[in-house]
Length: 324
Length: 246
Image 1 (cartoon, chains in turn red, brown):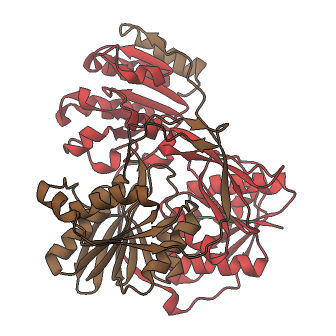
Image 2: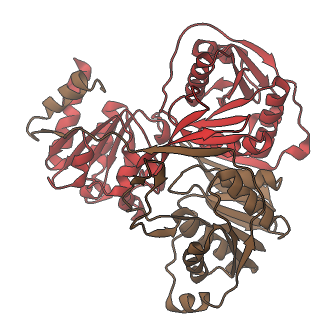
Image 3: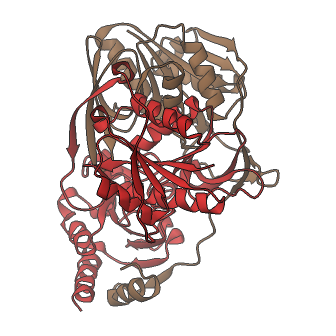
């Protein structure tokens, strides 16, 4: 039975999280001896969609209804569920993005499927359908068995990675049609933050700073370091709460949970709530003048020193490496 | 306007997470239970603000046993008018959503709020499921919500920005940071909460579609490698050659 993966698109092409979801679904399909079919909603560029073939997808189905160019959880969930039924699909994979999370739960209800969101590894199907997921805001993992015949899994961005092979997928039109009453919201505007770095939930490199910076006027050295690395900037909760930095930069238990490859924490003590949101980073570097800062216990590399001296030197050293 | 706010009981954010029974159960020894922050700080407070501005009623709903009455009274102390507790031990998301949808279906609610996720299982499932069960619109991760008549304009968090949507009541919305400012209950609120109605209703049958089999803690980190602040080149070298991150 084929595995269906919903692929988010932007301007008709798969988004970055779509390539990761395809890689994950492709791997799961291969593990279980099945085909992997991708589904896109809204108008799509066939040449761009065919590229999913290099990530384990054999066929792309697009429901190219222009009304689906804007996100609407109700209409999206109906389109995906109905197409899954037409195809006789039992397993549907999503990326756990803002939109993916909103529709995965609706699709699970429609398909009477058990759902695991927050998955970080492909299902273990040796004895059931066991999915590893993050729990307690990153402080632990849970293994959850889905017992229903239909299954929905949403994977955490940057947890499985993008695995590019070769090949090209065929692109076909889906058979589901929607009526106006299936639509429930009107998208008025999308405000994108300026800048060319990846959004935090998907970022591979993150430079983050906290109260140790003493004031918002001192963030220049943080931004310089982020810039030379091509990293996304983040901050601790107190810094967002007092308005030194925007709320969307707050990482931690009550902010954004992230899992970049490299997390550099500057002037952040490492309270348990902060660690919960970042401790799945692959490599953690901590720069703090307090040798007793709890963050050092969670770090791979640490510098006990004054951020105002260390960070500019670090930026210069990385510049030198990059230009070498 | 009739507003329903779904509230959950979760371990305090400072809780040390351990497991018992061969790592199959969360060890609740010494754990302090609190109202899920997203439910309390953002969903409930925005619901109260809407009521204060336009009149109406704010009901909170929780699915759980009598132990949860303490967090329900806290929500009443913050300002909710009344509460429903569905007396049930279910924790599987579809089962929880089924209980809420069943209790809400005849309530005539204009808006159903949830927090964007609970801080223990982080599933973000309940809002979408309740919306689907009740055939309502669902807008997730709202950081701003303004009402004009029966139309809401909602700003929601998306990767790298915000999306502004319009939606008509009735709808389900999940609250993220920024939607409102946390309110600390005062003595009067705490006293009044004791007299506000907390209606306990019995659960309806619902089917579990998944089960937690085991928990693990992240592998412990090796000791930190400390580098002298006078030798940042060594850190760059380690990140480049050992960790291969830059």
